[in-house]
Image: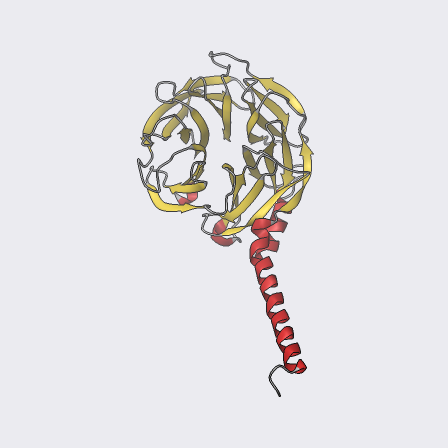
Length: 350
């Protein structure tokens, strides 16, 4: 065959087309979970609370089958209490002030057993309420907390381990997390500061921290650092493990965190990390230990400017496999069935 013949040129073009097609398929397969978050249908949304600046959410499951959804409102200085099955507003907890049962910029919220815990940035404390009565029990921490934001708690039998992020100004990072132990006995809560911790420098330094999540079964604390756009992994004893993840994947700000336990999944479940964009929030799914990025989902209708999320496993009313609640645009809460998220996760895997 002579050089430059039409047949040779056609073969070269065909070969180039095959290579280009293969490359495009490969690029699509590897990049689509990160670049094109799959939309997840909404189960319900709460009413809007304009100018309240809602921030974080937590769920209490009633043993009788119902649920209460707690939503902090930073500018209104209250906590909205909604039906966790329908999203309907049930009541409003608290009012502005400094006394027991009152709030000054309530931020994070968490539930453990029959206790509801809320951080107050401007009262520099954590407040505890009884569930389901919502009776205020105690507040504490104002002697050591400067600007408390996030919290995570676990435990049983009346002994609980509580971790609070303290996002104060200044360059001393050694006390960014406060670890308290709470003891409940005879209807009273006794808090004790166990330690303050955080690396002063290097990759483990906690520069701008809000959200924190404990995985006690793995002796792990996940801490979002908004300054470096990554998660830093500590032990429950406050030691940096040397491991970070999410950099280059998280594009906006790492905010909400949740774990879904699944013994059949890699590393025993999934870790959900909120990537808070002003116009589009992406929920990034990692393996439970954060070592592998799986893919991304978002809400349908759009989910945007999301701070807190909470995930409750198991069927609940219209929710299958679990209920995922996400704050939308400082305005309301939008809720999703974990079964729909799981379907997307499986599509990423296969």
